[in-house]
Length: 71
Image 1 (cartoon, rainbow, N blue to C red):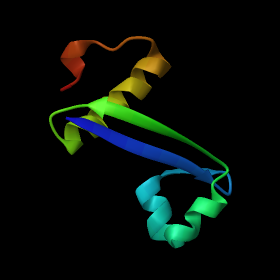
Image 2 (image 1 turned 90 degrees about the horizontal axis):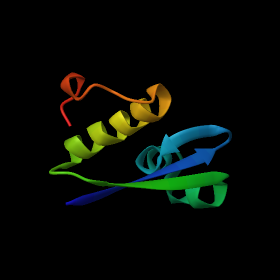
Image 3 (image 1 turned 90 degrees about the vertical axis):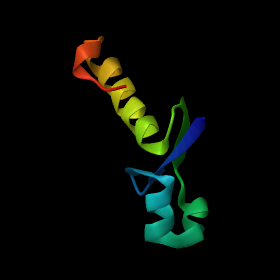
Image 4 (image 1 turned 30 degrees about the horizontal axis):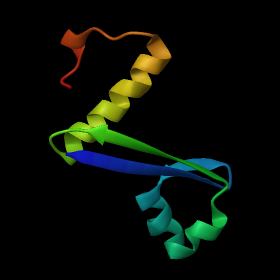
């Protein structure tokens, strides 16, 4: 299953779209300075989040030993 996560920058702060809605309501759309979307293939929402964290770690560190992660 595919999971999509939207990240937005408002007032210089990055957050996920759900947090933006919770903090600013639907008017957050007019406040977005920048945004990007990440799509992940995973078995469930939790696995999708873990894969996004893993992707960030790989980008930062260059490689990650598969024995260190669940994904």
